View 1: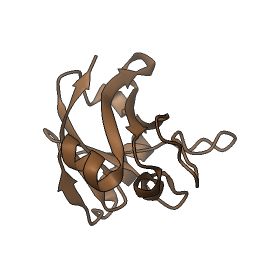
View 2: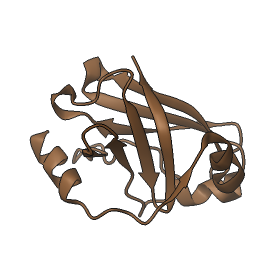
View 3: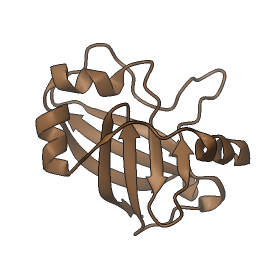
View 4: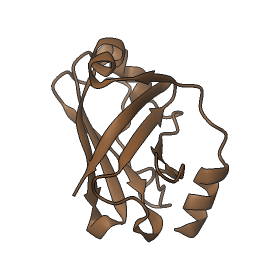
Length: 134
């Protein structure tokens, strides 16, 4: 797990346009449900519902590398990709309107706690000011 944090911290920043929840729906066709602690605090679960499949397709592509950024520490947390399971996130070429999708981020050492502010970057999409729920 420490390797994931180190790799995420060394990753080059993604070019991203910051968005609010309203902008996320208008520009990227998703309604953000939130970020929650999961797996006894060792994972962060980012959930969203697709409202416009054509716009949301770019966020669910195979070549996109999502990153969660902790505002307090600046740590960049990556999506784990176990060998037999693959990346722990939703991937599809044809998203469906009304369906919820997820991205799980590693939280090594339980660095990010409930109540902290985080940002999520997925390709050219960036959503700032998300509060982690317990």
